[in-house]
Image (cartoon, rainbow, N blue to C red; front, side, top):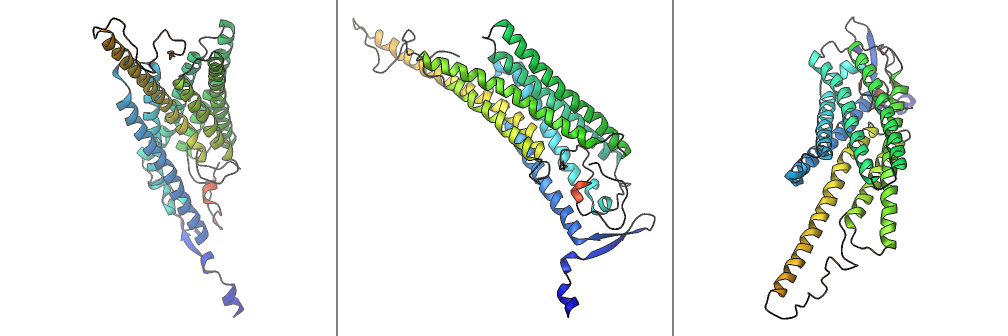
Length: 362
């Protein structure tokens, strides 16, 4: 009777055979962890996939034709496209032969085709090019907001920004090369964990630096406009708010990945920056267009009043002309290849996630 009460049916194990007939055990908790991990990370990448596609369509539809040749628009469009392809390949990985139960527990990927290996190499390459687009877009925006600074400060900030961006790109490129070698040989030549962690850290530092410069510069500009009692600076406020979001939210995701056991939480960093950069531009541009349209309507109404034949035209009540002092002014695990008895207790610790974004750094 004592044996019956101590028996836990949820902790049972079953035996599988490797290709050469060697038996190995798999427990039900291990299988549950494997299934739960695959479902969670598939949801993560599917959400990023849908968000990238939606914002890409919105960017293409709402951007005016005369602005579609600008470098910022091109970089934002390419970044959203690359992020869409990257997350799509991740979804295919977790629904493909790499994520079959026997291939995972038995470490037997003999049925994985060459195209599946090629798609995993493509993930690492697309991630690097995505980071290139993000860094270049941030560099362009920093150059724009610092245009009013003195040449010495402007060159210093731009040089330091370029150095930080180059450092992040260098670590990501090194990870891309080593990760691709690991995918093809299944034997890492160097420890990929520290390289993946260094790449994530330098990327987070880069994003925080760019957005800090962006936010601080516009913060001083807003304060100066308030002191001069110049109102109606909504577009700058919009960019300021979006800059704060771009700075804080990706940084939070890049920091909490070391404490929150959620799969691939750091993969949200590039996706969030990729989405926020074009969103802030569209929002600010729409507000500028609304102000211009309102001013044109007021000026047109004033001209009609002056042409009605009266000797002294009267302005609209509450209307503000351009010469008024209050008028509006124009203004980015190592896993082992051996499987035996017992089976691993943490499937995600040695899951064959070649991009290393889904692995938890411990």
